[in-house]
Length: 228
Image (cartoon, rainbow, N blue to C red; front, side, top):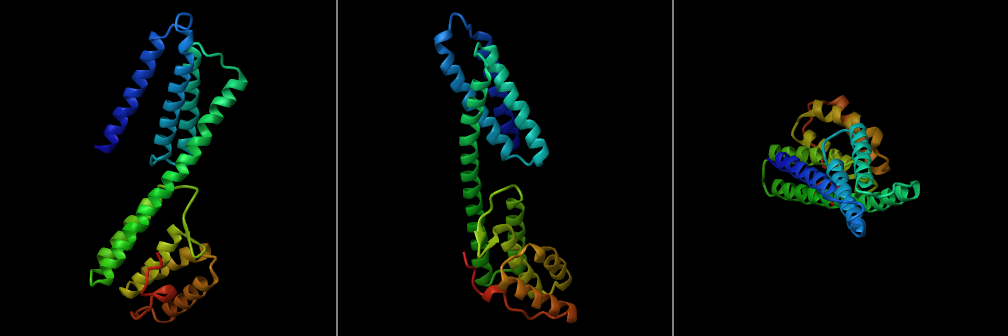
């Protein structure tokens, strides 16, 4: 339903821009050109933010960025704006810079919400909740973070997505799911630069390899506290 509403919103905005273009007379309404440029700025900003928050891969996002920007520039030419290279570069720069800053801010807020969700799940688990429920919440947090590209919050020198994976490794071992734990450990270990965590992971790998059915483990990094 959310995606459907989003598509309807995009369609209505496209209809609005086409209607304005058809109604605008460059000779008669020349004094309103700054207003049309402002509309183009707001619409392009909206489209770029919508595309950046979508689940498309980077290559498709780049293609959509290009064609949406081209469509808006052609629309400006249609309503009578002279598309010199100075205007084009200035307009795109004035759109891309705030888009970049807004996108970073939105990603930051999204990741803080993920951290809050993880902390809630951690507290519920430590209060006697199910480890399975905690694991499911961690996996949901990981899935949420996959939508974010580029900037990532860092804790203890470890990006948030990898930080969750480190705690997930400890939880899996505590649950006795050693094979899954070892597989995740080997995949995440090359990404970890923190020497203390690297050492803890190496010790855990040795323990798992020599005694794969062992169930007793302390949480990495001191274990019984979530540092967030």
